[in-house]
Image (cartoon, rainbow, N blue to C red):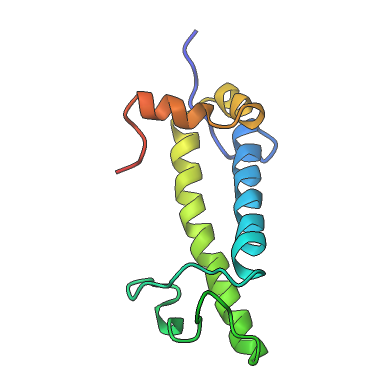
Amino acid sequence: MKAIPASAANPLAPCSLLTAKRLRSQVNGLWVWEIHPGKVRPIVPTDPFLKDFRNDVKDGVVPGGDPIGAAEIVARLFARLLVGESTLSSTFTSHSTQEQCLEEIFSPGTIRKRLIEEKKFPPG
């Protein structure tokens, strides 16, 4: 029986749940490990989301004196993360079946390992 590639069209399918799980983890990590403790990674001049805010984020800290400015920086940090995570999750699910996505949920790293072995990861 031939494996059918996964579709994310069904929100309750394993690959959709895997994508949501990965996204939740990344968003949580951004807040817990970078924004809240003031350890935002340096912003590069070519960053399309944050290049205009390079001088505002000093020593990894989002400035708190300007709530509107801080909110925009945090929103842009999340937007940058979402674009990158969406691309990575798409790479994972486009080369996987629903069964493989389900296995990834319970045994993280199985899809990455398989894609590396198949020379499909990292993408590009």
